Image (cartoon, rainbow, N blue to C red; front, side, top):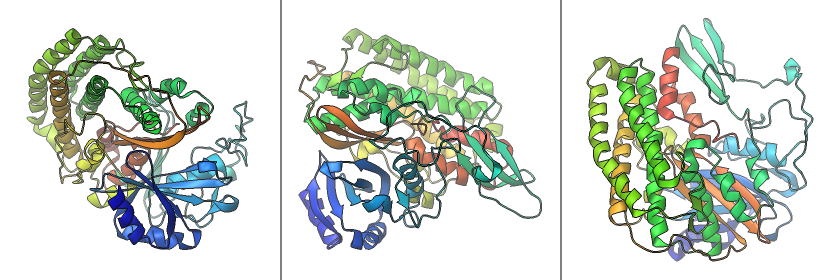
Length: 523
């Protein structure tokens, strides 16, 4: 940390002050407004990646709004956080330098009313047209109550989608209500014939106010909120939240609990990715091939229930460790399940890949170029299948991942086939990690009873979809600010690029290969 501090001070000399170490891997600095633009340009030239941007009221005792810019640099274990005061509720935009900032800035404008004056996109994000003007629900002054919304929106106030014009160009609107039992999201295609020339996605139709709901709660009571963010990221998000609280409070999670958390995290990754590969094969009209993956997924879910009492492992994670121990006999059952699982997975994969009609649909479909990965902060299998070796478990190890390292694999293909094959590899690797964790499982306690303290911290975890970020601030023993950024929030923007040049019937296949969570945006 001292070495990074010296490098950052040298790199950003004159642009920052008050540089200080945060909680276990975070480095905070105040950025001077007069040198802000040059500081941002320097970070861009030095290949720093903007992984989050959010607003906090009362940050470290300040009276104004504080914008926290969170940066990651490949190969560096530390995270850099720049704190910038938004004087008078106004700030300059950085979206032209860091394109991933666009959604963040629009989100902050909706939630807090901070205006980014020179932003190239000032449309609302999670506050749709029905919400009144000057309504900013993340302000401390706002109290949850009935909000008078307007259902009758005149055409001039409707959301302005980008237009692609020319001879033969027409639009296909899809959603927000879909044929299946899924959450709402809108997709606006511009096509000529069946070829897609532009796609714009719009999310946030069922924004739930999770971050506001957490304010004022006791930290322990917020665990149930964290595990409800997205149904198939129960363990990932509860571990992220608890890790942030544990960092703030200096809570040492017992070794056995760390190993058990790893098993549950990898079981979650495994069943989630099984759903992905099964869905991909279903969307190329080969349900017979998908059925083997679905059977394995169902068996994994049943195994989860034997381990924790819940198919989705609810109520298993708590601050300081685990809510309850897992009997060694159950762990041995899981180890035996893994023994049979890997051979059946290989057989199912070979069955699908032996059909040329399957490969023909997957290969060269839904290409995501490597040069998009860092500007949009795309993470997880999407990034790795496009040649970027990024995995939070390796880049910022937590729990037992420093000792039990994932087998990092990348592909240069960037298409649906690359994502399909990479996810198969990661399912196998999750099985290996589970097996190794059970074999090396230590005896001992599964819960630390150290008290929770005041402070703030970031936690990064790797979900099946990619990197999730949780920021927690505790003041006077209660949650003061809880900020969540899931991998889906960033990765949804990849689909706008992945579909270009493809035909409309391939959209469901491309979408499934990314497997993005609507709930991961509707916070």
